[in-house]
Structure formats: structure tokens, C-alpha cells
Image (cartoon, rainbow, N blue to C red; front, side, top):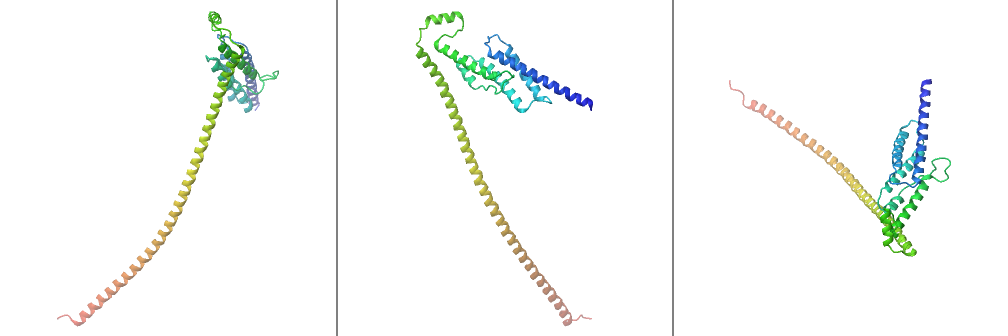
Length: 268
């Protein structure tokens, strides 16, 4: 009994240590994600892969956290994965659109955070994507020092209001795309509802038809039963008349034979 208790305590300590290491690594990943990273930065992707493995181990642990805590951990890990996938996109517009669908965590990872770090990273990423889109519109994006200088020499200075209008046009375009997507989803849901109601009406009609058929079948069965009883009675009556007829015929034959013997005696 003492050994079982010790095993339970050691398993609980292992689970708590695993959760503590997971929280530390998650906080480190959020800190790296909030910093400006270069293209050669590889740590965040490796750390996120390790977080996924630790999260699987936490789910299989005997003394795992509550389902709400596991859901929050999964939400943050999925946010970091989505952030990495969005950064691999080539176009700033695609990055901004992908960033809009990311869902940051709802609770702080460590105690001294006032705002969840993933929300801060999300806002920073939004601002960075907006800046990249503005640079792309203004022609000031840097794909290399020589290319940037050449572009700056060739491009004429644009009016500030015109650049803001172009940026608003791009944002409005994405907003229109989102509204169209929402409208398509609404139409799909409406069509699905109509199809469901139509199928429900068809099933109701089929049930009514089936009920009428069952009632008609019961009525036909009762009629068949009545006719069978009448036929059986008729058959019994026919058999009785035939029996009496045979008895009469046999009796007549017997009496005829006796009379024949009496009238015509045997010759000696």
C-alpha cells in the first residue's frame, strides 16, 4: 500500500514538472514571437514542435490538468503554429488575411502578465502586416539594398492622402471579401435549413402514407379472416351433406341386395 502511494505521488510530481516545463517553454515561445525575427531564425519552429509533443504527453498524463486548461494550452499552441505558417506566406496581403483568422489565448501564461502574451503578439503581427502592406503600396519595401535604392530613385513621391486612400482601399477590399464569405456561409446555412425542412416534410408525408398503408393492410387482414371463417363453415356444411348422401346410398344398396336375395332364392 505504501509503495502504491509513493508511485502515485511520483506520478503526480512528474506531471506537475511536465506542466511547469511546458509553461516555461510556452512563455519562451511567446517572448520569441513578440521579437522581430530574421529569416534564419529557427528556434521558434523547433520550440513549437516540442510544445506539441509536451501537450500530447500532458493529455496522456494520469494527473493531467483540467479540460479548460488543456483547451487554453491547445489554443495557444495552435496560435503559434498559425503564426509560423502565416509568416511563410510571400505576400503581405496574404499574411494580413491569415493573421485575421488567428485566435490568441484568453488567459495569461505566467502570473506577472496583465494581458495574455499571445494577444500582444497578435496585435504586433497585425501592425507589422499593415506596415508591410503600406510599404508595398508606397514602393518602399526592401527586398535588398540595391533594389530598394533603385526603386526609391525611380519612384516619384506620392501624396500622403493618396497613399492612405490606397491603403484604405486594400483594407476595404479585404473587408468586402470577408463580408462576401460571411454572406456565402449564410446562404449555405439557409439552403441547408431549407433542404432539411424539405426532407422533414417528405419524411412526414412518407410516414403518413406508411400509416395509411398499415391501416389498409389491417383492414384487408380482417376481411380475409372473415372470409376464411365463412369458407370454413361452408366447407363443413358441404362435407356433412356428402356424408349423409353416402350413408343413404350405402343403405339403399344394402336393402336392395336383401330384397334381391329374397325374391330370387338360390337354385339348388
